[in-house]
Image 1 (cartoon, one colour):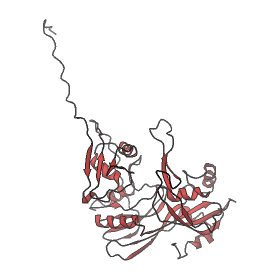
Image 2 (cartoon, rainbow, N blue to C red):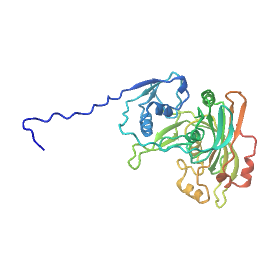
Image 3 (tube, rainbow, N blue to C red):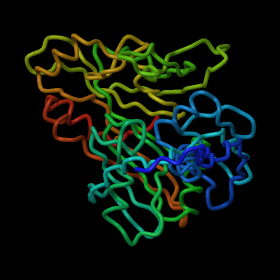
Image 4 (cartoon, helix red, strand yellow):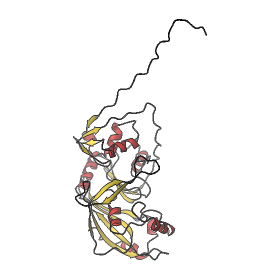
Length: 352
């Protein structure tokens, strides 16, 4: 190569910097009304990893009408959502696995809504480490459906009735019924110990908190606890309990109770925390139950939490006729119960 004396190399060209991200205020329109906050953010923060979206919600950087909110809060038309500065990496993030099409056990379906019997172990939607859930699988199974949205949620470990709206108008009407406690939601729960027959009403406020992080994680797992009504994060939670049967599992001498549990408020982990706080945790509960007891129950054949969304009453969003749904207890739970407990499930008196 020939060297040219006296010429200095010119400055290297620097790539243009992307403008620094700024706070954005987004007003919720009519089409987005009724959406969960996390789903609303996924649409407005495309390219931002879901884990980061959940992090800025928990940290309080996302605000709705200047107030802190939870990921499962619903946005309403006219709400002003604060979106904090977030930088989208230039390199595209690896695409999430495509949800496989799946047809779930249908309990009912018409032109505006459907109800499925959700199996335990399946999340209702993707997010927080889950690539996809019931709603994504339903959309994949029904590619021509113009609208499919969850009306409410169930814990991943809980089986039973889950409502899905097929029209925006049905979604908002049904969610209004859930908010105003016009629905009847009854669960089946098997708990440790003899539940006191007179203990029928649990009215204890709940608050969310985080466990200390483990294994280098940025945050700990989410938990819920009973708190005093004056606690700054207290949320009223009302649970009604009725004993269906007292029993012992085959090969086990510990007393247990099969309960019909009706919730009048829909707080996160409400049934699990209320029952555990009373000293009767749900059998197989890996968050609020006893570890050694859970191992014993697993050896007896119970390898999941015994909580099932059994019966649901609501008003049809179009006809306004009363609707009453029931999801049979899954085989893996029913086969553990003695005959007298199964007979109790045929009792038509299901609501408090």
